[in-house]
Length: 140
Picture (cartoon, helix red, strand yellow):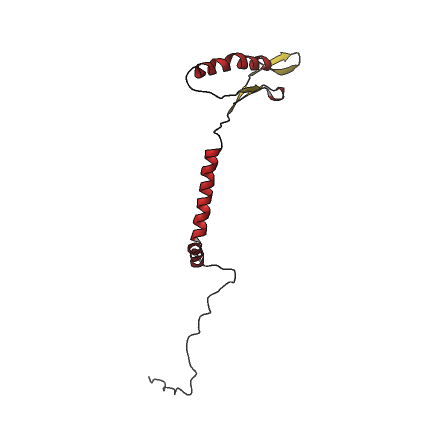
């Protein structure tokens, strides 16, 4: 078998693989390296802002008096009361009686021993029955 004759460089066009297309670049694209450089360049602004927020928080905690607000909700049980053809739910105990007992008996018996020592208690407790429901809210 014979080999084809070598063509002269003048007769054959230049055969190179096609060049790959340039990488896609979008105008709104931001590289991670640019973001890191911006953070490093603005480090004193970031540290200053962080220090100002921490200083403000410390001053606020030192100036504002300590206070706590807690509340509890008690639910008075309901029982079914059959009366003729209808069944109604009735509280086991009247809410006004329960509120009065909590104010007059339970709260003083709990706070009394605590106030006897050297500890000064600045406690205000309120007992309410919102909207005449079977719930009692104790707030302090």
